[in-house]
Length: 442
Image (cartoon, rainbow, N blue to C red; front, side, top):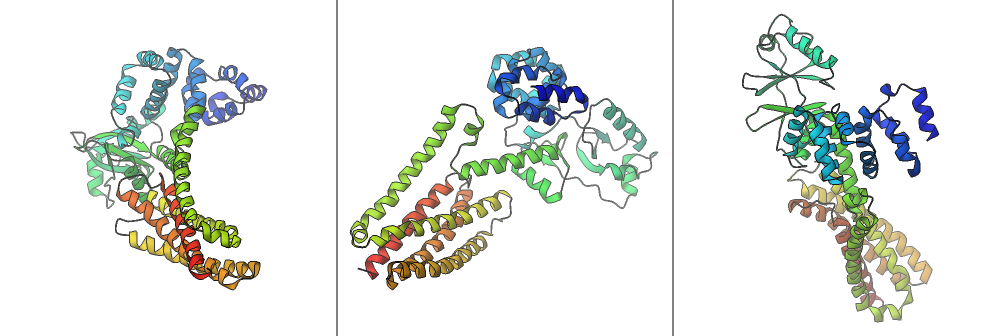
């Protein structure tokens, strides 16, 4: 608490970024948090709330009146306003209604418009605050209007001028540095016709999947992307800062899913909800572990006759699991980044199988020699070496095939892949090792 007070007193709070304030608040103990919030200017509280983890949202909302929250929302872009209101509705629908009633009509209209889009559509991430020039506007008038809107705080992060026709349909995109080279006394249309440059603009349709929008930003190295309706009429824009957030969220989701953890449950402060989500995956894992145990049970007499097999079994299973996880992680990430084309599956599988097989031969030699010396039985080394090759081969194959198949079935490749793969590598590893032992050693 003292640290926050001292910091705010020694700095001009108007010059502080909301993320700086959020970082300070996160370092404060729970008992002092509510008191510390009151030191933040009311006009910044909505921005600070969006910068903080979800578990702090309730405390912030309960510290201010609906009218105060509405006033702080008025300074946010329309996409951030919508995000805040959706979070607030999940917290308390009644409070959300009261806050909404205090907003001005333009903000209400923007929020209602953006809420109509699904969370995986481009329209849900766009800002409606966008300036568009007509083809017949002179450059001088455009720059004057731009300047006025920027001074009044109506526009932020302006990099491109979008040009529309008389019907509002998007026609061109002109960077500001190119705009400054135009003849200020001529119209936008005249300047474009006289310029050797091409000003065709890449856009996204409002109902387009947000994953496709992310690919466009990455492929064309964009800083902003206009959003249009099915007729091509300009509706808004998506800026790169929102895309960075989406990429970060997608990476987090993949990490959670690969570990069999529900991302929504983990972000919630409800321990029961998080525990329940984890228990479901642990239950599934228990069932798959029982399948592997059944395979081991099939060879109980073989294990009883040679204790060394029980000692070496975990090595085969562990190596296969780790090799499969390597292939699985690489393929899942490449699918997410769009680096695997539709007709590129064979190349991906071939690469992972070759890598796993090469490692299989290498570590088969190492483990085979170690086992032979350890237990003074050369054929035991041969058995575990062959099993190692078989299991790592299957690990590379299934580690690449499973996410590709799930993707083909329109299922998130990260969800459940690790559990399926671990089951396969355990079963193949135990069956090949104990089966070869039964054939060769007994």
